[in-house]
Amino acid sequence: MTLEQAKEKLAKYGQEHVLKYYGELTEEEKRGILDQIEATDMSILEACKHKEDLAKKGVITPLAAMQLDEIEANRESFTATGIEAIRQGKVAAVLLAGGMGTRLGSDNPKGMYNVGLTHELYIFECLINNLLEVVHQADAWIHLFVMTSDKNNDATITFLQEHDYFGYKAEYVHFFKQEMAAATDYEGKIYLEEKGKLSTSPNGNGGWFISMKNNGMLDIVHNEGIEWLNVFAVDNVLQRIADPCFIGATIQRGCVVGSKVVRKNAPDEKVGVMCLEDGRPSIVEYYELTDELMNAKDEKGEPAYNYGVILNYLFKVQDLEKIMEEKMPLHIVEKKIPYLDENGEPVKPETPNGYKFESLVLDMIHQMDSCLPFEVVRRKEFAPIKNKTGVDSVESARELLVENGVVL
Ligand SMILES: CC(=O)N[C@H]1[C@@H](OP(=O)(O)O)O[C@H](CO)[C@@H](O)[C@@H]1O
Image 1 (cartoon, rainbow, N blue to C red):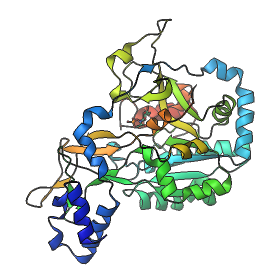
Image 2 (image 1 turned 60 degrees about the horizontal axis):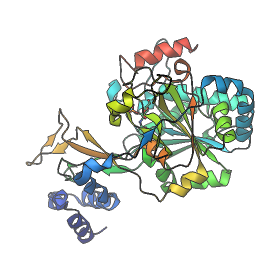
Image 3 (image 1 turned 180 degrees about the horizontal axis):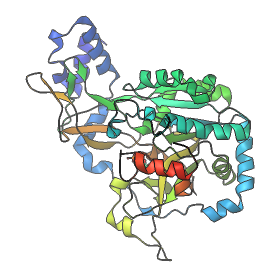
Image 4 (image 1 turned 90 degrees about the vertical axis):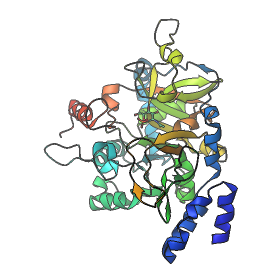
């Protein structure tokens, strides 16, 4: 993009200020900021002007989950169907690993965090071990796509290479980067992180499939005949990946998405809840859950929205391709964004000072025609590591790993 073109684009969105220091930049920095301006989707920034409308949901009603007793009664048959699909190469896994271990006090990618006590045991290693169990059970390799971000791509690739992918077969591991979105002040003006660099952050986990497409991953998907993608988050060290029983249940029920859920342990637990929205499957994220929904009861007096998602979804590729062109809802999140003050000095704010813009994977569920909420046993499959200590932490995950026979 030329300087003239950049100016034109910026003028359209009222963002001319980002070129304030352009005259002081080296040739390389000039190229850098022009490239960034070209790559940034600025239309989304308009969203802060009608922020209130963004999170508006339709009419929410309960959606029943397939519960543990029903799953147990059909385990053999579901598992056989799942194993068959895996052997035919129809299933791949997608690890969402664009995040950093910041909240765990680390500057590394989150997956590089060591949860071991007497020996090294990294988050990535736990996940790969879990997937390897299925590889052995099915006696077939499963393609693993790893989504990184600008912030952690090189470190992630080097780390996994250095550790020989923890025993995974290298040809079956593919990396792709998630895209970045600009971060702004409360007026929707993009911050500068450096004189020649816009402030950006990863665009949320909802961009995973588009990023796969933009990075050529769908060629692999098509060439290999992959029909199902099991998307999962880096932080849950206990989760079963490409779980044959879950795959088989989703296929047998004729659903285009499966979503692993746990029974919530408290009305305000920080998990998205499965529901119907205007009659279609949907998820209300915990920070958007109203008190009314939180406390609603069904006819048996049980909480009506009692199933929380653990961020482990099985999507049918064909249906993902159908919705690819549809616009996803935007979520605006308040955040601490490092910026340059009016004198061009870098500032690291202590409190939130602006917005970042994200699309969320859970919104894709609402774009799908059918979804099977599939209950799993919390203490066997849900040990998310969000913090260092307390709820959903390194400590609680260690306890659960030990309980499940993992030596730390
Ligand atoms: C946007 C998104 O996918 N949010 C997920 C994700 O939330 P966190 O904010 O990362 O804790 O993980 C939760 C499970 O640990 C899940 O319940 C929730 O829906």
